[in-house]
Image 1 (cartoon, helix red, strand yellow):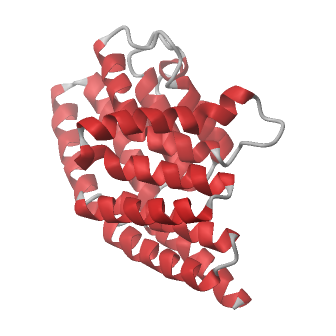
Image 2 (cartoon, one colour; image 1 turned 90 degrees about the horizontal axis):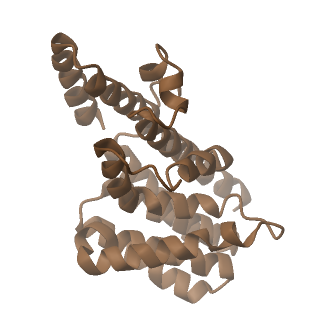
Length: 248
């Protein structure tokens, strides 16, 4: 993340000097997301402050970018309701008319894992069937993508499968898929998703009261997030570790 931030700020200077407003908006959103993940900035969305309607009017080319960054920040911050709201905006039919929106449709394959995991944070017994089926439908899509590009999507399919099994109470299958997701993310050098898989495994083992295993996975997640450069997530996982130490 620190390296990505440095590169983003460099290109921001370049596009600003050339007066490229569209790319500048994209890079400002990108920079604010990086700062949020690093724990160095508030969720302030500086890129759309000059023109608020740019964010809310779906006819504006930057609207999908705005919703994308809002959803990603909300996911990593643990704001499930907010995340779901913006993930859903990115799946509205018809938002694929221009080049920007077409690219956003392609991006959905990559952030659909977060949408699927996020859904479990808001599903209730009284939730409608569409919401309950959201992670299942996303998992099917990830399996198809993994068959085409194992390097990009195998870890994502395994992690969402583990979450589905955990939700259904199939602990053995959940265990197998969490392990596969961690291994696959590590092999693909996706340190952030390796950390995410470890963190989600930690929550699973904590839920079934296997605290020693939960502690081990949370500790692995903390190491991954530290390597990624996300102090936000390091602090979050540290709180989980401390809660397990208190109970032990």
